Length: 98
Image 1 (tube, rainbow, N blue to C red):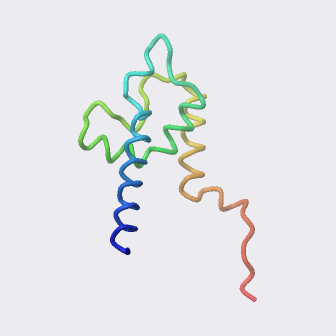
Image 2 (image 1 turned 90 degrees about the vertical axis):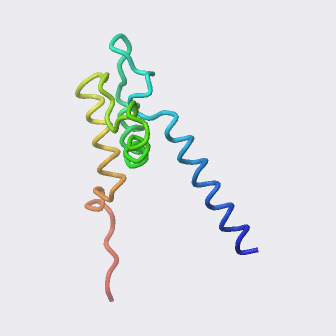
């Protein structure tokens, strides 16, 4: 039974990576005529670690979308990166040690 549970976790992980990589930066959805905006920046920030790993095997996938709207894309991207790695801990409540 333990082996089936482990296999299910691995399959779900592989499926999650495949789904997340479908919207990775550099996949051809953003063009110079229709660049990626704020919400694409947020999404690309959230999946940046997955994009980095997939980019090792697929040279067309990048961590950062080159066709973007500029400042708004950057804001969404960095907000997602910072919040995803615990950068918003400044506003979280600290547990008391008593």
